[in-house]
Image (tube, rainbow, N blue to C red; front, top):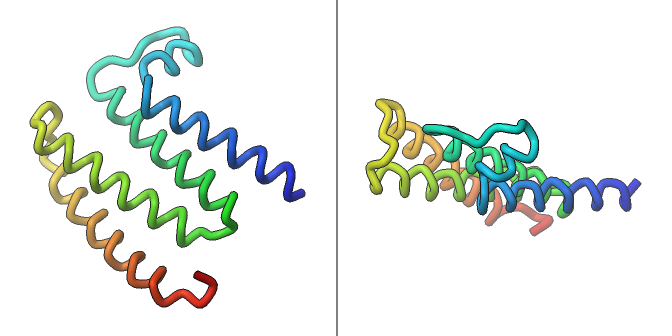
Length: 115
């Protein structure tokens, strides 16, 4: 069971890295069409989620996975907001929400006995 879980975790994390690095290329390989508009940004958020999922499964720690996801998504979405390329009405509130989650999860991680 551990071998299968570790293989799945590594596979998901590798797919996440591919989505971060070349989202349109991955989409074209999977769906036969490149991404347009906000599709690349959404694919990168999905890539971050897959990396966090892989990390959570590999380390057997949902807390580590959620902390990784929230910190990375906060930074990426804040970058998008500051760069000004994609700025929807909910972008900054979502950045703030993920920042709050990141702080709360960081505090939980710091006091976790299994750390």
